[in-house]
Structure formats: structure tokens, C-alpha cells
Length: 123
Image 1 (tube, one colour):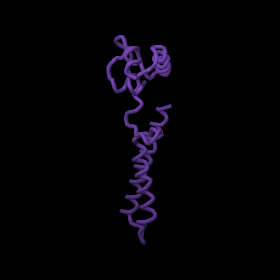
Image 2 (cartoon, rainbow, N blue to C red):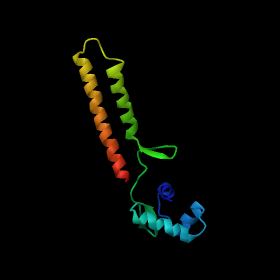
Image 3 (cartoon, rainbow, N blue to C red):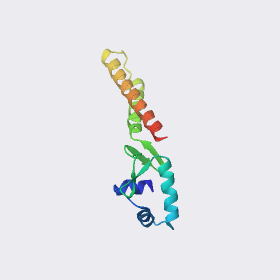
Image 4 (tube, one colour):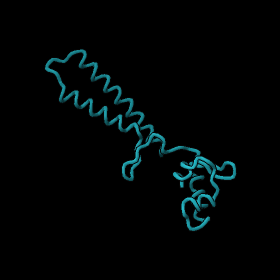
């Protein structure tokens, strides 16, 4: 129901939700609307219901899991740091190499923080 309201982008009444989702009765639609209202995910507006808090922006769906988009950057920078300290470890460590490692670790820390923040906001 949340996804349906998100896609519609305009207020939907109980009967619209029942028909749009193919629900058996208006009481089923009302039950789900009440649950979404209690969680603060939707709100009543102009005689219908609309999404109040967007959950799926910047999210990636993999099978049944929904993960924050920042997770992909975190994985990328974990990979680059690992490659830098294993595969591309020079015989003699230079300032350029240290700078590259530092920049990648800083980016990893930033995206790890953003990923954790996105996970917490979903709860």
C-alpha cells in the first residue's frame, strides 16, 4: 500500500486504494491505512492519503532486501583500500601512495557514516 501511494503521488481515498490494489474490502484497506498512519509514513490530505515520509528514495532493492544507495560506495571504497594495501603495495612507500590510501580511507569513513545513518533512519 505504501508503494502504491508513493507511485500515485496524489491523494488516494480508501475506495481508490481498494480498487487500485485489488483488495477484497474497504475494511482491509482501512486496516492498512491505519497502520501506516500510526507509523507516520502517510498522512491525510485533500480527502485522501499521501506519503508523508519517503523511505525508498536512494535505496536499492536486491531480492527482498532494501539497502541504502550509499552502501555501494562503501563497498567500492573498502575494495579500493584493500587493493591499495595488498595488490598495489609498493616496495618503497612514498608520499603519493600514503596520500592515495588516506583519501580512500577518508572516503570510506564518510560513506560508512552515511550508510549507517541511512540504516538508522529506516528504523
